[in-house]
Length: 575
Ligand code: DON
Image (cartoon, rainbow, N blue to C red; front, side):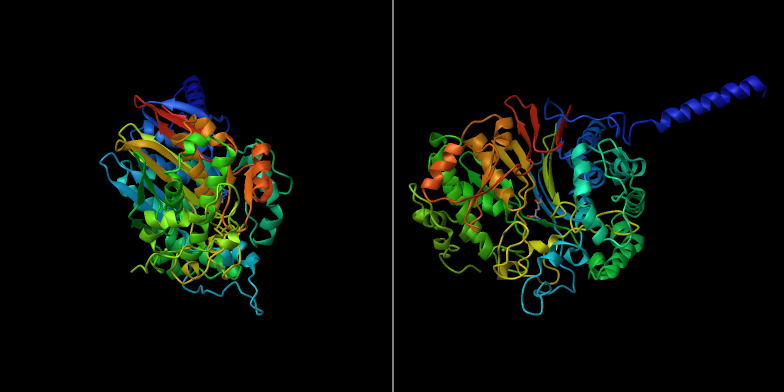
């Protein structure tokens, strides 16, 4: 080869390799981890993805464009969220998927965390009997056995593309990094002290100087964990090297998750909790989430009261909705828990006569104090930082997934060498009767800790059908406010006829029986607050943001309207 040919050949190869190293992430040209923007609303014909992070939504969209169905997109989006949204996206946590396939089949998949075999009901009680919520909320002992990876593989049977393809974008995002937003920088800076306290091996999330917008977050250890999952499938997480790293992390911090706990974890297909509301069929998550049942109770308690005539944010409507929230949450505290361990009287709690009975004490002129609202008397004994994504495809498959580490960044413990946050989901159990959890919720026997049991959730991934076709796909994070927000968003659309954006963006409120107060969002009308106070209601502290709802509505004519919440970096994509 003469010198000139050699020179040009080398230059050519260099140019090619340079170009390919700048190539956008993973599946295609649509995802650039260093230049991306947030889209709050799209109208699309072929499919749509809405999630808490623009890069994750873009990954899902690319999968749809490359021939994947909504389940493929949901799997790829969750894996991407595990990298770009470590607050709540996860492989160290768990979640729920509700789907309606174009075949008419409905699916509820439970991949909620599970109490380890060594767990017991008094594990968070100190010598004097006091509950130690630090231990149930932070560090190694607060983690349940993670369910997400098992859930992803269980849902894959409905997908079309190989798992290796769906996980590849996440691997590349972890390996090459992505530019963090100002919100992410602030969130990481805010947990620095906890990260130092609850990790003996320094995770990549700690850096000497503060994080700032545009910094690149590279997660090599997480990339390696994802590669093990890509190569070995589910055992790439629950067995072998990853299991070893999890168990060794547990030992370093007095956690109790064992090899057997990991190996024995199973995602479970359940019968969805479905109910009619007027002309709609609402499909939700059954136990161990209280979401579907609470939504059912609340919707049924307003169904015949002509709330549409009262009007959005009228004192009457807010009062009625507050009172049904109060009653549903009183039942949650007493009767709801993992139905594999505790008999949850679902049909009685949703019985029309029972619900009418519950509303007998409702007085439109004044507040019903929670002290007088006990859990309902059953008619007869009967033989119990999160993130949401909604996806729809042109074939008519609709999927709602809510997944969580519980608190933002979970237990704040990162598995040393494996690069992912573990959940602090054990706090969703009732660690002692009457002791409020992170979200102020109380419980008792139904939700007591037992080995292998799944802690009660409020997550409410929901699909509404109209004329037997998907009409609305929605859900949100927000702890106990989740069911009451899904409730409000649905009432806003189905009863108040509001636009999808208004239904999501307008200020929300929340009552959960105990504490006996209305929690409300900035912008809630002060005049309504004042008139409710006169009727005997107490208001808690004003909150800057309640939840982050991701919603897709099917418009007349069949186009998809995807709306991402304005309360975060949430982003909608479609084509
Ligand atoms: O499962 C539950 O109900 C809670 N662990 C959800 C936590 C949550 O939504 C946190 N996000 N704000």
